[in-house]
Image (cartoon, rainbow, N blue to C red; front, side, top):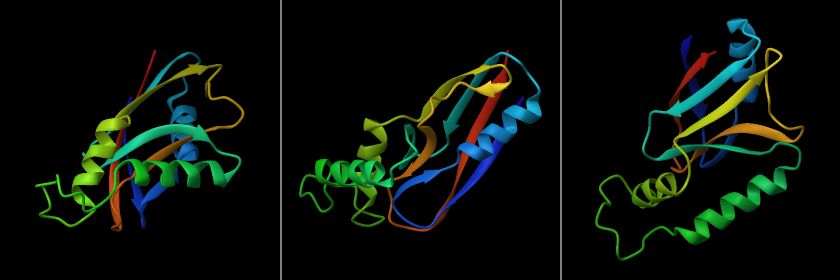
Length: 135
């Protein structure tokens, strides 16, 4: 089964969407298999991260923004604004796809793990994530 999820984002940062993926897995009605996620964008990424304490997400966002600052004089790709080239670099440093085992009809995520879209731009938009669920 292949599906497309539309994930609306209103800001830069981590956006949880585990529940949407879990629902797709339930609807696929398979006991064991693999769920593969792929984001169709070059300025956002995917992440499995702690879903209990929001300070962990906040710290990750701050750390990556410090690692890849805006308005670096090395950037030549500035057509779409100060956050454009840093967003591409952040996406290159993180993941465009994730694979999660399915066991007993459910995602085999750990207790504190959640699935996130990591938006690297400051704009409001909708991102597309392809989801493949199979044996």
